Length: 221
Image 1 (cartoon, rainbow, N blue to C red):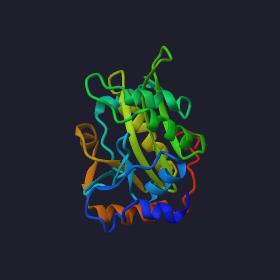
Image 2: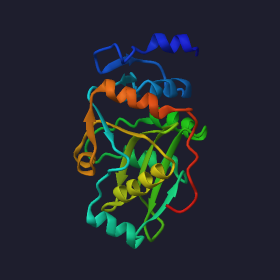
Image 3: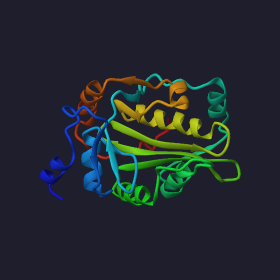
Image 4: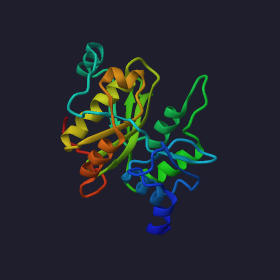
């Protein structure tokens, strides 16, 4: 797959006015990384649909709002937190929907597993006292940019406790942009907000920097 073929596949989101910028392709590492660097992400399979939303939802990494209940559980050490111990299981947890269909289908899992193997995709795991995985988050990190893909909780606040620790690590690493794509009730409560697409793309360009994979700090938060 050449740079030129990828250039031709995706519409330029700085010029293209629609949210949908391409249909088809695959979940190859080359295509996924190229897309994320342009502010584009996949949102379905069969066919794969690629989007760059306007407006775009982001977090200010320095100003995330956690409830007193979540902060109390963090202080109490109610859950054990790990990084990249169970990436495929986190993706499967995020794909679980009791009533609705999921967009995290087998093609997504296979493609992002390869991104994870190469150091571009990461998971955070939340374990309870019985060492059962009860929450998690996964996303893609390039330079100082993190694309939060999905989160799940099988125990109350487990996912939010995980997010707390994720943001602590991102701040420790000097991250500049956290993309959450689209507002929902949970992200809005946590302080996510919308900005125009072109403003998002400007921030993304600055955050990509040297475009290296994220080496997660192992020192205490």
